[in-house]
Length: 478
Image (cartoon, rainbow, N blue to C red; front, side, top):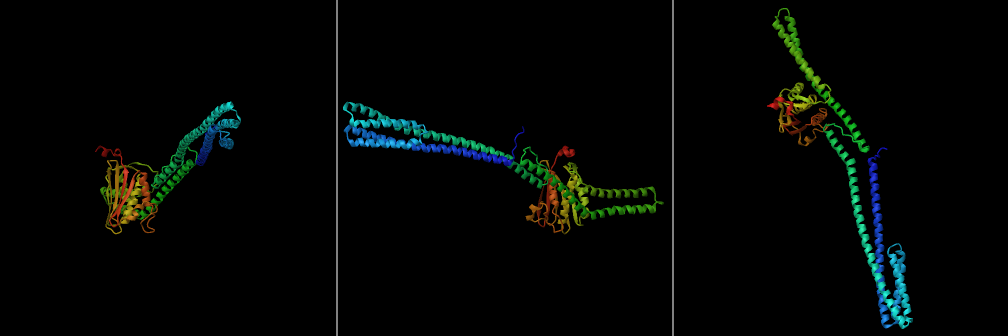
């Protein structure tokens, strides 16, 4: 038989029902004990009254025996009848209690006492002495019984209070234990998954699309996590499509410059071919070799331009590999060079031996976005864009900076520039996705990007990425 699995709603309902039943159970027992205490208190009051009445009965008994006054006899009878009336009222209320037998004994002895007192006026002297002894014995017994009644009921009240206190303490401990268990269930099944989902949402916003582990809880939490992972998968696909779309947008911007770059080697090839054709019958072998070498170099130059464009536009899976950072920066600068106006210098200060674990294509997208923004920030040349790299953080972190001398970013907008669709450019000049994509790519490399800027002085983007010296044997051994 398979184990019973309850969903979260059913667990909460069961927990609430258990709480209600526990509270009802505790309340019922508490009410029962409080009712018993109330009844015992009433019995104690009656017992106190009976003791006072018995003392009055004994007082008038002594007066009658000493002085023989009929008024004392009548008062004795009146208090005896009063005691019987009190007993008649209390006996039905306590007939199910332990004190009922003691009240029966008290009533029998009281009736016997009243019978002896009724015989006293008519008894002869010898009989009178015997009756007096019996009266004194019954009177003392009645006093002792009344005191025992009070003592017994008070002791029972104390026992009930102790039992009630113990029950309430045990119930409180059990209730706290149950609430602790219930809190643990709620925390484990509801609060913790929600916190994980919240943290994952923030992680996804930073560009990390790693899915959540799915636990076999067989409740709403498992279904929510499964749906969340499906959503993460779709978001990752959309992110890749967005990056590719941004690439296509960047390619559109770069196309005109690439055409201009290709035009120069093609012109050189055409010129060299014309010279060869004109001098083919007259030139010597060395001159012909020189012209063909020029043609070959220009073909290689054109091939590198097209290759860089194709490498940038090609869709690949994200993959980290040891790559010289200077190669990525150089390819990015070469691609964007046609878009750099005269008077703006791009200074490359990245060490040739700085090798990082990265995805070259994605990092090229990062540098292209940052360089394009830097070029657009320099409204009026001359200006300078400086790219630098170094190892920091005790040799475990690579620090890359992209700095320009442009117009800068307003202070109130610095905290928002990595938000999707936020842009400081004019309408139609940008989508606001470039820096958001840059942020996501850097996070995917387990790195971090920050920005510093002052209006009118320029902007510096700082990228910090993990660095492993073992990826560069020359640096590690130096």
